[in-house]
Length: 234
Ligand code: NAD
Image (cartoon, rainbow, N blue to C red; front, side, top):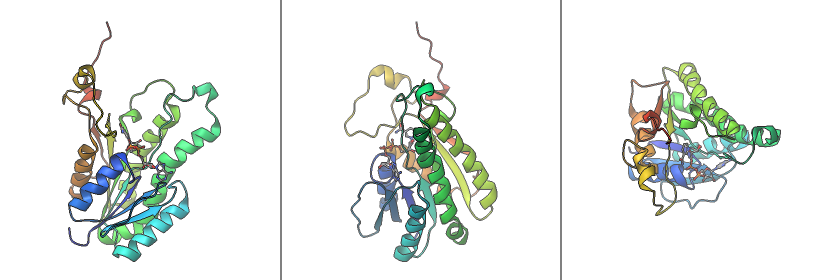
């Protein structure tokens, strides 16, 4: 993977950090974008910024080209969750717009500014959505809508940017991002895979999708089978 370069948003923690570490281990140059500060390193460039702003996408792409000379892949991952915080009849418009701005518009902006360079490198985009694009708990309207939007944005981009650039989507289920967290037996049993997910599960699928030359426009659920299991309360 000498000289291959990937842009990852939301790289300071959680799934994004898991992807950053995975791709660095695989020999890629990595640029991560986050509102939180990150420590730059040999093959790691850190950009501090809010991905819902167009200026952040412009800076992230420009700095990546300056530092590494190319962009081969983009993982749109930066996101926020406000699930359970607002009942729909009390959800302020500003809050709705904030969630859509980061979780959906931010993905569009990064794709927009990376696209010319991904075309050149015949690269790929992976967008991180959520199983909440297709199933819900109460009081999750903005998050669910943003993730449904990401699934739709992904197939639209795949058609517009093909054949040069492939675009796929990953819908993670429950991914544990806290160090040392333990889960009840019932929580594990709820997953046909027998466990809750970890960031590495998503990083490995993203790596596969970036290299899978005949796969584009698809949404891949990575949830240990949770959305396939029927559960009846007694
Ligand atoms: P996290 O909160 O641990 O990490 C998100 C990262 O994004 C943080 O580093 C944060 O600082 C950054 N970020 C937030 N807003 C930003 C902004 N405006 N600009 C730049 N960076 C910003 O979250 P996570 O659990 O690792 O989730 C990562 C992605 O995966 C999100 O899109 C989330 O919706 C999705 N997802 C997570 C799970 C899960 O169970 N963890 C499940 C389904 C989908």
